[in-house]
Length: 562
Image (tube, rainbow, N blue to C red; front, side, top):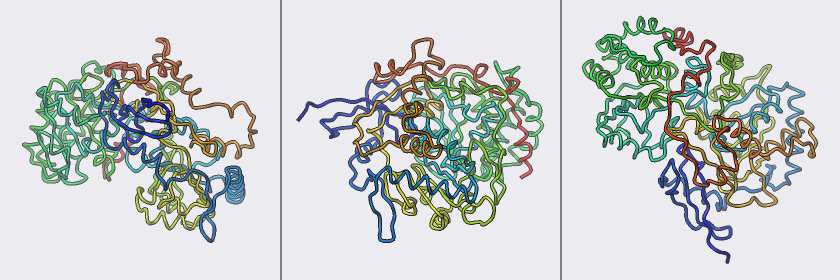
């Protein structure tokens, strides 16, 4: 046996980005625990991290392509699989149009360096506008608000939880989720630290969640009434003449219009609808205003509801008018080393409504359609009907709205492909399943969730174990399908590009490039690098055409009558 070695990496299973210390011998993992020297998670890790070993050793995990036949599943070669897939995809698109092919992307894509970098060219190679993902089931209202208020869908403010004195949590359960659209390892420790320094946590939720149990106050609210509560809190700020934009005084448009709107939503008027008495609402507003720093954080319960768009817009409004925006202890913007907004030009035209779904005419946004419409787009006959689907690291039959309808829809497709390591509720309908490497066999850099992080840090994780000759990573699978769809030769120079090449380029061109940031620097610092706390940066980060916050976008004006 060889000696026992130690490997450091970030966990890629959820948003928290916890640093891990993995001891191993040969190809066997001996232990997984928190990395005490990780500057962000500081030794914390949750039980999910142990699943990295489970994925690696699971006897049910697929490692080579399989094809469904009349008598069951059979093994096939990679070349045979790619040849059949491209032949079928091209044939269906030639007969029924490019949009007869659809793509569904599951949550793990957001935690994959290779997929995050190669999904865009993959979609382009397929030539279809029909993209669906898990994002439309839980978080797009955040992106819509960011898009129309700040000029970019990825410009989402996050709570500066480590420095706030008052945290209002609406429809969120970060003790269980480990933070969501708020990358914060050991979020329970960070929340308890608020209380230890004399701060206060208030939870607004219809349920007594685990987060509510540790909060200082829990206000029960009737489901889907959060927007009314937020309007009442905004009313109180104006009514008490306590609006304070601080350094944003000349950078906010629409304040007077918001004041005119809020006049119609006094606590006394909304109390019976929201189920919280007027005195409690006014006290909540007063407590937030009295705190040296405060932040309102709205998440799943506020986002995944009939009025999710209004909730996330109003959350931003509340943070802005109370003087808790782009300020320590309030809602702030991270400045990640890999800056997804580097090439985003101010005034860039939004994709919102650029296309509509065929059946219900629901809007396209952020490069995709709502996954809630996928089944009907497959099952409704007519021009543009989806006849073929490829799913990538997702199980929408189990996780998407009306999954039973998706099961029926997938069963009726002309052809289906799944990139997945398991035969599951969704992939059972595929004609071919292409399994990628996972977890410890892949390199890792969290492109997306550094953009939602409560502290600016940066870390790269090389693969722990090499992939076997008969294995492919997800990004290699996507790249091969793209090449065949576009008839690109295997020896084309573009085929030599790796995620690490692109990562190194972005790090060097990013905000810390002049300070020597590079992939090699991250390799030389396996525990990660602490860049520092969130800093006021809205003036540099904002992407609206006029450089101002649009406090009352037209999209929400139009939606208010509901």
